[in-house]
Image (tube, rainbow, N blue to C red; front, side, top):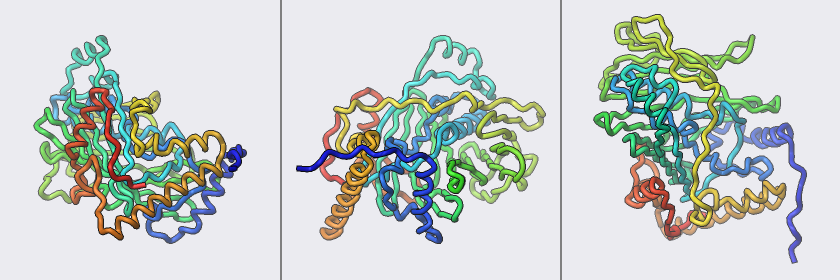
Length: 422
């Protein structure tokens, strides 16, 4: 007769980081520790597996507002405003190590949000009276989200975002590459992660590609994790021939962290795009400049003007709560249900039991991968047409499209997956 799991003392953040650091030291010199998928003891994990999914919708109303402006520059600024709010979780909360998602595991959710943003009327091409009417009427829109782990080696997840009322959608592949330098972890987009692709159907299907910058996870030695970004990223729209370069500034040795950024929006040639630095942009091509703090207020200044106009104020914003399917409608490989026993053990401070349950899942995944290899069976995602695509833009299967329609309608009924990855 087995004994009941033992309740254990919760380690503090400092001891967690010391343990984590001792494990990481084994990977000094490894090109990509993210591809290794090393297993951590359960007491180092946060019991919230959906943090694994980079849903980019910490403020979903900024996504729904894309495409409102009748002006091309206004729409690029709407895309940038979404960009600056997509990772509030790392600005307002502490970084943490989530669970390693398993092959075929999926997550779906939605948000219903006010169809109004305080700074919306600051943009060119936006009808201020119409925006005020939306605020007074408390109009709302719905955003649906679906992601699935499509590959395990390398670890890749496909995602799709949709706001049908606004005709705005986004898709892409999430894949990280990480290297431990000895004092910090350098996180980069993996080879299949070509950014977020935003489409505005009602604007002649304008498509914007948003690339991810490199980031550093620091504070390992002093026991206080923090995320810093000192890199360049790009937003391009071939149809409007408009491009944005954002430069996240390196912090100085003296004084407080400012989290400063600068940027420029300009006309470019999609057929001959060689401009990668702000200093190389011709003054005559510039449409607007961007400045501010990605932890605070961000402004844009139109070309020919000296007046900086508020684009977005991050200060009062926090990540929005997700609406998730009722537990009785979730499938066994749906993220929250799949990891529920591990989560319950962690929240119950039964860390040894949680580690055992987690290791059982990892072993089951290895066994099933070995069985597929022995039988020469290729894994096929359920909701997306392929594990990866050369262009970085995943396509939904017919079933994936039906899942999104179900999320919009609040109908979460699904058949269990016929094949399980773990």
